[in-house]
Length: 280
Image 1 (tube, rainbow, N blue to C red):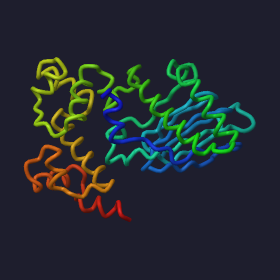
Image 2 (cartoon, rainbow, N blue to C red):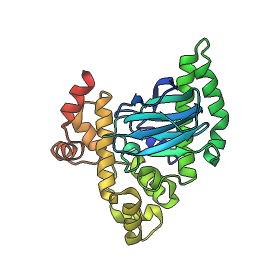
Image 3 (cartoon, rainbow, N blue to C red):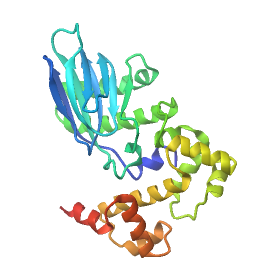
Image 4 (cartoon, rainbow, N blue to C red):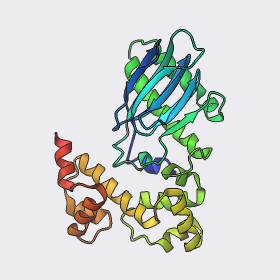
């Protein structure tokens, strides 16, 4: 399995909403759910986006920004821009931030400028997406949602290829050595992995591997292994897998009790809580 598919097979993005925000005055408010991931693309005009913690970015026509998790944004026209600015807003259900390691990030904004090589490679797909979303035709909703999902996957692939991200899972997957160890964890979470065996997967010494993994991923190899197992378990429980004895065994735990303790420590709630939430 390739680097990105090893994650997306467990946490597959689903487009839930594609809409256009038309801004003609200052002080617009854009409420983006913290449980969703977003791609914002400026179709026309120029806008300044400011989050509550004062993270800020400016978008000019053709620029876009990925928000790993949604925030409340203040939207203002850039000085000198006259008339209406149009912002394409693509919302994705990508599992919650608590579950999907792709969203467990120190950074919140990933900007793709119009002249960026990533933007150039995304251009053909972007053109079709804009046509379907801004000029609706028969079946456009379904077509647009699938196009948006393909667009996001292609964009994440390019983030990895161009080493766009400096910290977190996408950064780890951008390093071919670390990626071998990370994919091994993703594909075989039940294995009794140790730092030494993961370092062997990466083709590195144990000490160098441990240092690079922690500085890139923000956690130790064994902490990531535990986190991946528990997030995978939570996702499976959420999707209806309720047999904890089998699930704990398949994820490398010798007892259900040990699995339950680790789950509560990592996820913050019990497996039963996840199951009940899924049924609501």
